[in-house]
Image (cartoon, helix red, strand yellow):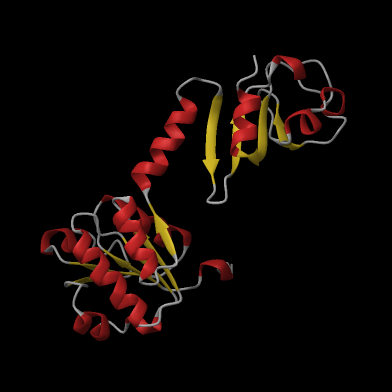
Length: 222
């Protein structure tokens, strides 16, 4: 069986802490060939055989980036979290190497701003992002929550009382709240795409997409 072309790119991962290791192992599992650079000898050794290639070196050195031929990669992930300086230097080296798509972890807004200014294409703030997600889940209104950079979100939620026993056309959720019910899942059944004639029961789970503030308004309904 041919491998999905989506996963054919080799990926370079800098730093094998919690974030970098999770990204590296996840990418390897998806079918990418992952090469990793880790400064700590013990940590580097722990990933030998689990990734396509592991190099024990300091990626903040331009000479190391040149030695590992980083310019041959199209995708890179900078997972360094212990040192902002090391993170920025490593990211700058990857930018200088001409890697077109660079993802980097940021510890703070200031760190994120520096990474963006030096040319990192995607900046991730996992602590903040997971915190936002938890904030939307703790009150029990939402069962899952994914927010995108442009203020758009997709959520899994219990149906508001005003939708129960009615079709989506009858409850007019889209016109009332400006969000779209994308799918509906009945207990023990797979998710199905929602259509205007889809009737909602109290046991259903809804997949809803739309602007964050409008989803929050819908979720606040009883």
